Length: 168
Image (tube, rainbow, N blue to C red; front, side, top):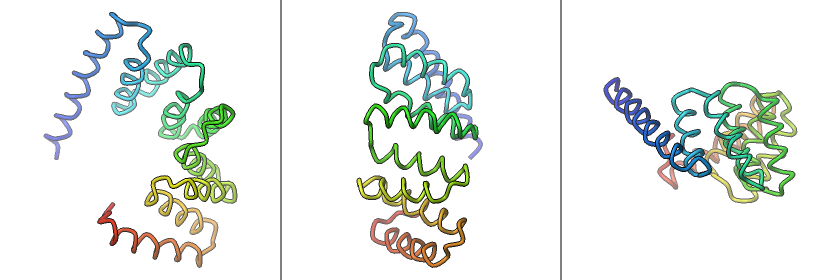
């Protein structure tokens, strides 16, 4: 496992070098900045990744670039900033299942279980990643002491896993 992790880190570092060279040639290329920000997120260099997300924001008219920025904030437990980014995504009328899923996660982390459940159910209605949504709904109901619903979602997760071979 250590060898695989070392190889993945080497791969990401090589990818970083390639992307930096590309950005020197094409400084306004949003895709290069986005890819580099994702690489920095994987490497745990969140400040660097956020710099590139904000560079993307200078070129993009829509707020969709704030969704990966919000995920970056979630990884470092900066829930207020994540929520602010997600609200700006929603203001731009980008109501995708992932947006609702991350809004649910953020509200869960902040202890606002009622809002978390509402957003996760919206994500489920839009047909987002069913397994992740069920898993989060189970966690929210469990933490909010609604054990009957929590148990229901555990059973749903069990049958979903059997039907789809999903063994996470």
